[in-house]
Amino acid sequence: MGVLLDVIGSIVIGATLVLMVISLQFQLQEAADRAYYLKEMVDHMDQCATKLNSVVALAGVGLSPSTAIIHATEDSLVFWTYWDYQQDQLGITPVRLSIKLSDAPDPYGIAVLLAQDNEPLDDLGYLFWIDELKFRYYTKNDVLTTSASLARSAEIRMGFFHNPPRAGSSPIRTKLQFKCYFMNAYMRGA
Amino acid sequence: MNLMEMVLALIAVVLFTSIALNYNRHVMDQNDLLINATQYVQATQLCHTVLDEIDSKLFARMLAFNNIISTYHNQTRTIDLNFPGDTYQISIEAVSCDSVGVELTVLPVNNIYRRVRVTATTPGLKVPVTLQRLYTKTHLNL
Image (cartoon, rainbow over all chains, first blue to last red; front, side, top):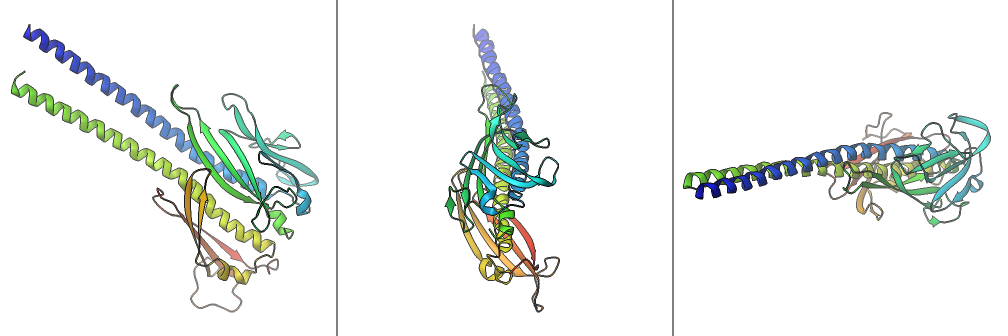
């Protein structure tokens, strides 16, 4: 009887240890996957900020600073510019560029859409893995404004997300807040 | 279970626990590095913002080229970013320099180069982020 109890006890303890090891391995695997995803996301954050900065800097090329911005709302930024983003060169007629959140094909769900005359740009028309985009605008003296004609810089707040490596886990999320100057407006005296 | 078996069982438990703790600590360290990387990107953007601010004011002639140092040197800013939820300390250093950005001790007359160096720190960021930009006086500047 004593031997039988020893055997049963050993099996229980052994099984518990094996389960713990397996559980630990799974957790490590998930942590490693999340770390890998986050690494990609950090790189993506940097690229998105750089892209938006370069797009906003070319707002209002060839136009008066007070008329370049069409809409300066919390959810979107729309402006005129003679810079043709599609051809990546100076155009002969002004184009209308908009930056806003938009529906995107699966698995992205939602993305930042950069559209020139309502057509997504061929090169990086969509910035994926972003589900939050907010704008705040500042005058040339760095005072908050809601007036499109007075806006000379935009503070952009972006929330990035990525689906978790395993079902049931929480999504990976990061946030970035930065400011873009309408450099062409400043070059024309702001 | 005799004494020897108990001792062996205890050693096994200690061994397993130490391995598990070691694994967990390394995973935590890895995650810390990644959180640090996120803050690094944010800090980089803040430094860019300061440098772009100077550029924009120079373009608009709101800032005279010769006033870069008097306006920005030794300036510190505390930036509370309520969206990501961090507070960053920004320090700015502006000096006269040569064409490759080396600070000058003896200033030539009408030196046309200024170097602005911006450093951002925040709790949790292991290494401060430093960016610098060289500004050259042109006929567009005041």
